[in-house]
Image 1 (cartoon, rainbow, N blue to C red):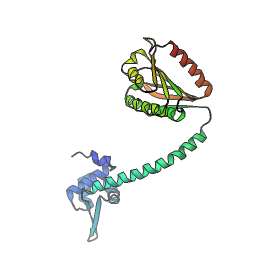
Image 2 (cartoon, rainbow, N blue to C red):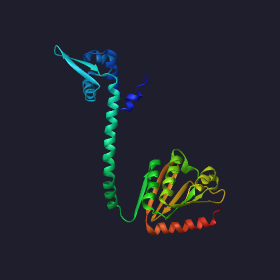
Image 3 (spheres, rainbow, N blue to C red):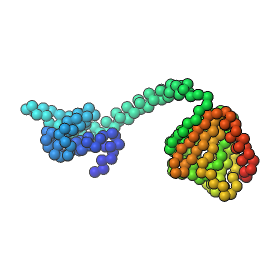
Image 4 (cartoon, helix red, strand yellow):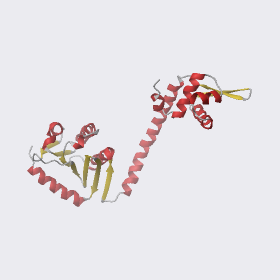
Length: 252
């Protein structure tokens, strides 16, 4: 029997062993349960207590001896529904916390910062900053795009991101490596509020630059994945000059 669904609803390995043993044994004392489950005597009572709190085990006392029994298996569905309701409540509370956390984070951020975001999630976190910082009608540049940014799980994320970008009214200029023209450059060209050009053939840059508002992000998704976010007006303005120069040398 596949026990993975029991893990998915939050039961530990010990809880699964004890619960399934009770299903097989029916009403039983701890001795046979220890033998059947392979769980030590020192642990079985704490596991039974946790299962009882989850409504999955009950007990009765006969002649001063405790007998344990698994609840009806349908109780697993009820337990899962209770977990889902609990997660919904936690989600609601987290959403209520986000504005407060953002306010505290903004108050702790100086006008000029440099941060490193590790991993694919870090690249996404850094990219999400563009939607919070860039205003409707403003431009952003993404310079030096190879195929590597789209590797792994990044391609679906970037597609979804750009839908939100042009919905917000932010124009993007992409400068791709020529060898990334198909399919990534051609796909990006079809996004609204997008303009695409290509670097000379043979130039391959696995790191890329995102330039917007007062910020420059340098990203890489080859070997180690990370983004470096630099918030500084002078740095951003300098990189915009570099971007404009490269753009003027590029071809559609």
